[in-house]
Length: 111
Image (cartoon, rainbow, N blue to C red; front, side, top):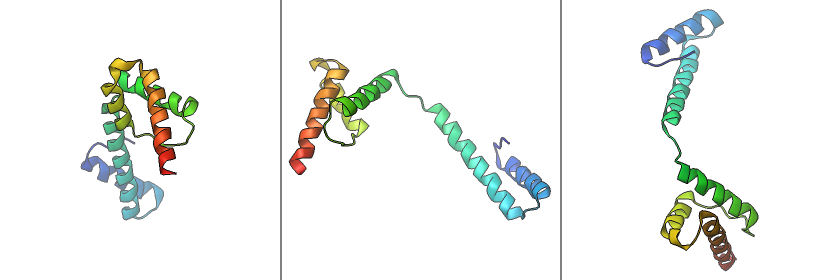
């Protein structure tokens, strides 16, 4: 069931009310949840990740698994800023390994 506006929302609730022997308020709650899910899906369709961000994400994941010795979560925005700032120093993969070592040393300094 695809609901795109409030008129369709109430029509869908009415159909559920008639067909399922539930109260109208329950049917309206179900229809409202369907509508909210539809809106969230529409928002997610418009957001597209750039190729550069995908590559940064792959490098980040690789470095966290293969290079990092501690289980520290990375903030993607900080990692992206680090990578753009140090872009001339090497490839994204080399920078990811360097960032992993920096994160490890920061983690150990707190322990």
